[in-house]
Image (cartoon, rainbow, N blue to C red; front, side, top):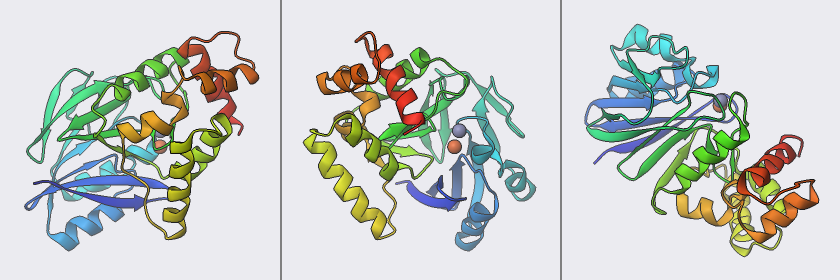
Length: 251
Ligand code: ZN
Ligand code: FE
């Protein structure tokens, strides 16, 4: 059985470490020190580094890790990734800590953004967040909406390991979009309580996201109506998504 360890970094990043026996793999190490601390303390050797996209808070620790460990560096072919040894486009299968992961291309936040799906777990970087989604920096709203729809198509019990603790603010926005969503209201209360205790709110699940994340609910009447009230001129999911994303950018 693989173990998944949460390594907080910076103000609100999560670096996820997979551990199997004395072997480890890490996803999106924005910083090396907190990862090295865990590897040293637990006597683990790092075999693989998986990168979802090129932003510094997701790969800034790669060089520091490679100074101490001989790890494979796996990431998007289309982006500049420090020390990359395996370039992926999406559609491949890779193995880390004896788990095989399907590599999914999820452009939008960045053009080469990848997600890794295996053993019922999804590592999705800055594409899908608990209660929200990443900003559309390089792609188009249509690309991002399609990427999110792809992730929403995974089984409901898939554990969603995103790369930031943004849940509380995301759910405040979600409530502005869907004030009458009972599941969302309950979730927002649970998340606020967890944060007050200092607990992580990640992972969530695809089922929870489909029920309460407005960016996965662009076909719901209440979400469409909210987008209409913010200037959406059409009701197709991409138009609704675009308006929601713009609205969240300044919320
Ligand atoms: Zn990012
Ligand atoms: Fe990030």
